[in-house]
Image (cartoon, rainbow, N blue to C red; front, top):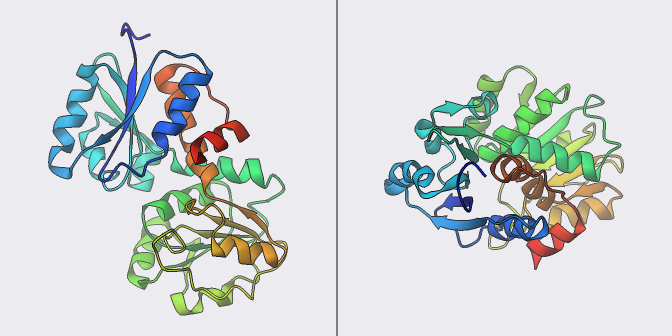
Length: 277
């Protein structure tokens, strides 16, 4: 493959021990009988440029990028995809045989693929979506929702200026809602997405009142530790269809694996079990 004996890939982050990507890609490598390796790489900001430029010379065919390097890694790439430019971050690097570094962002793809798999009846064009948070994940979600034709996106963040900055960047389809008012805009939404870390193990709970939710609203939490967050539990009790955050992680990994190892992998129950084990 690519003239290299054993293709290598990995995930770059600081910290990195929490990453589920090695389990995910390791499961696929084993399932498809591919002689390759995928390893966690703990890289500090100061060493990022040196490490990324060295990887192609060491037999690496690509790498995922996680917190806090998704923005700074873009300046190290020879070519950046339109999606990554629009989102303002990259999570997938591919190293070409000539050493060129290609940066892409597959988070929006993973987000939409997760919804399509687990809520195939959801119609993006039918009604507004509500998004909590204005960080890197929110950027990917906003771009994906706009691409899918969502008519209006109500965006709410604990600090309003961050949400306003995204509105000025992504346009008039986004309407900013004060954090204290977030519970009051759920009624007409066809989709509610939490892109914040609230509700994650070790983080405070998401305290937005949910009594405005309709039973036909789809609720998605990008948090996957725990899998069943308080938001998803409450929404489920109110009769809403819910989608957990693990599927986004699994689906965003597909394009990278395909590019690096030449096989399009399946996202299924076996994979979920392996990653959660």
